[in-house]
Image (cartoon, rainbow, N blue to C red):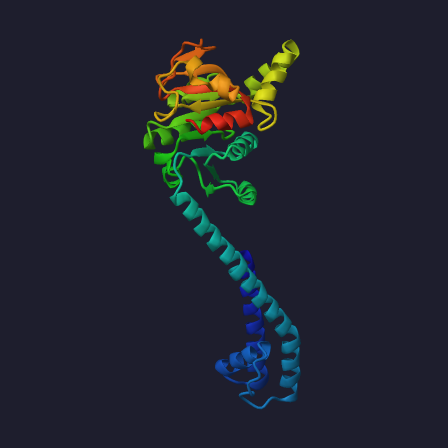
Length: 328
């Protein structure tokens, strides 16, 4: 818009100079003068509407040399902005609207700062659907380049959350840099979808976690607290930390910890852990079982029954976990 506005001002300046020049030199009407100016700078080749004096001829030459190139530059600049930028923007909006229309069971990430970037990267690597809400133009540009779905606006605004289909979202992650903003986001989200699971970032300041939980967050995490604990554990229990890194961060390489929900159609529903064949057929270790009502069973014994709705925390190689997923 700034380019179009600047180009329009330059074009207006040329028209004023040309029209004023012809009116002063030839004592003609405004209509004839502006017509002569337009056909000169656009090089359309119409015949002059009045005989030109020698002075007017030199003025026309000056107008053509000074105006034609500038006029063509302005036209190309406006065309570039309107066609390339406008078309790209239009297609981008259409593509975003299409992707938004069919999204459900997705995650809403509020804030694309240092923490938000990592979260989105991991969600993308694990093929999870997500929408980012961000109001920084530079960050929005970076998100577009990554190909992520983004809504421009304030996450505390109900209309933006509605556009993000919060009523169909699986979870909301509030990771803006401000505890106050995260509190407002949580309050707005819970007002629109009381059942949504909310994970919030805390600055670690005294009382921040309490306020975020009071606002409705289901879980609050302080990156600074986790980072400090991780550094301390790396010194005290380095082998344990190396094992956790191996199982959590290596993805398809080496071992992996994964959680899998047991559906009603799973082949081993209502069977014991021993009879399920998870260990024998898939070479996986069931580290824990989380019941549908929230009860957590760590290191379950072989006689533990697997129920529909359970979440199995399994440890093993990526290919074996993928094979078990097909039976769920």
